[in-house]
Image 1 (cartoon, rainbow, N blue to C red):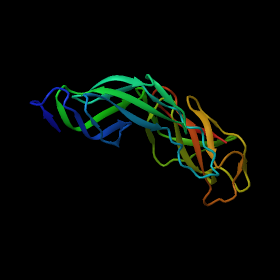
Image 2 (cartoon, rainbow, N blue to C red; image 1 turned 90 degrees about the horizontal axis):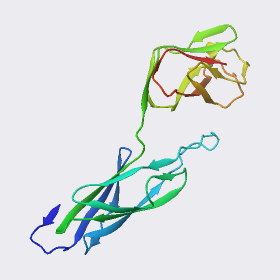
Image 3 (cartoon, rainbow, N blue to C red; image 1 turned 90 degrees about the vertical axis):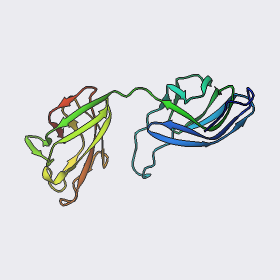
Image 4 (tube, helix red, strand yellow; image 1 turned 180 degrees about the horizontal axis):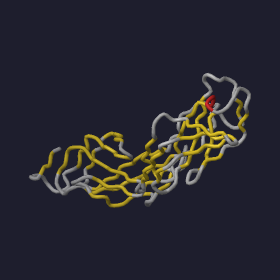
Length: 221
């Protein structure tokens, strides 16, 4: 970057590129030129749908929420339109217009803009044992403990070989889990029937609590 400190005031801004930081990633926009030290940039933002196989039912993705935008020196933000916070639902897009003021002398180089969402409150989950239960029968299905660092109430997945508990043609119509967990769904979807002993794996979607937890996970089928 270059500062023309000997030039006239308002001698112009030459942005070689605009680097946008969001959720640990960096996205680049084309640079712009401005004869004035005050100018506007437009940030296109789209909350993309997650790619998935068409026959797999997927829960709707959470809305993205932008709460704060900062510009790197020597720039300062004058205004943001629409006003923050901005919430963008899945599949929707918006254009965020940011008006900035640069230094009173000439500038040539990149512009860095950082966008921030809500502060994530994370929890620590330790599950030493995962059990499948059906009636009076209860079997352990994991070989080692599971450790997760999750956002509060985040949904995580646990997969299990069902032959350890069920026999061929056994049908599962409902699933329950022990507190503080909540059952969210299965893949394949309920109801399902054990048709193969050797390779019938079911993935359980489990909702974590909003606090740290250490203890077993029991899945009743």
